[in-house]
Image (cartoon, rainbow, N blue to C red; front, side, top):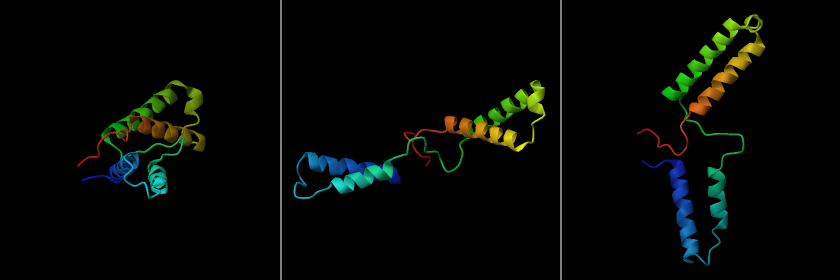
Length: 112
């Protein structure tokens, strides 16, 4: 089964090929190509991740939590902040970044 992104890429490649071969010279397909490019674009600072976390992403989150816990055990000043809103945000941010780093790239095929 073909994914939406694969279908959009195929449509764009086909339109571009037809333009290059001057088979659609009487039609302006640039708006269609621009719309496809916009649909495939990922804004700067954003990444694509799977709807459900992979095992690798969950493992990365668990390891980030363990690192954070160990850091708190070895640093009494940090240990005093455990449970605070600031510490909770830092912990979640660390897990989040670890999960994103472990996420598969968009070049990876979707599971079937």
